[in-house]
Image: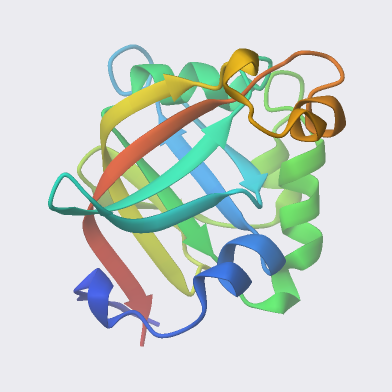
Amino acid sequence: MSYKSINPKDLNGNIFDLIGDKWMLITAKKHKSDNKVNTMTASWGGMGIMWGKPVAWCVVRPVRYTYEFMEEADCFTLAFFPEEYRKALNILGTKSGRSTDKIAESGLTLLDIGSNAVTFNEAEITMTCRKLYYQDITPGNFTDETLDKSNYPKKDYHRMYFGEIIDCKIKQ
């Protein structure tokens, strides 16, 4: 199968379904140091217009191995998969790349797509995002304190990454 680049505005589907229900993989490559790749499953994030650009945002906790990769990378990808890959996504979301080759264990195939970005051959949709901005979630900024208590019992607050969608690929 091949991929076709489209304008992110032409993407079909419900973003709440794509991110919240189907999950996505956040993938980054350490191109400045050793070209290693790491990925993680996520179900929090969004898309829209910010600073006049099409953007996607995701969150990564500093304790996750992927955090190191997101910090070094200029670009990251968000990849979405058909339901048949749920088991692979579960492996990538529960195992650490620090201690195991979880990508090999998942059975998914890495695919270099340029811009120092990688995705997976099995993905239906991949968005390549150029990092624009990051912001740490600050506990004092919650206006609903139950969010802090229910999502951060370990006080391991996420870092939000905003990226300009510079390419959106769909499988043909």
